[in-house]
Image 1: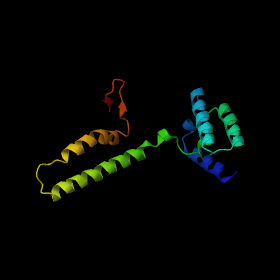
Image 2: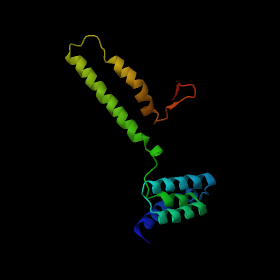
Image 3: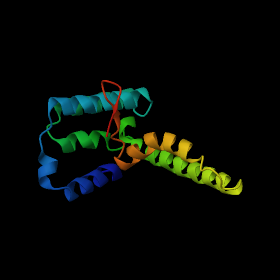
Length: 144
């Protein structure tokens, strides 16, 4: 076996048998096929490799078989928002500290930084606290 296959076998052997043997549904196979096609469109897979993986994906019975097909591919864009939210929060905090420092250096009168901090914080902080689960409601409101 080559190194990648051995690594996947080792990883799968560490996972509980119930997870490895769980049967995959048609929707799971379809998601894997879509992810493979996206990877090929990005140039990550050759046409021959895509064809082999698609055949294997459509014949897969378990989650482990599907996971092994995409294990060497980056996570889809939807799976990476946590890093962006942490950078949003870091930018918010850094800007807030800067505004308070400017306020302190200019005489500490009326605490005007409260307005930009609150205005921006209303959108950044809930997303960071709830792991990015802030989403738009159908009527235009926010749901946390």
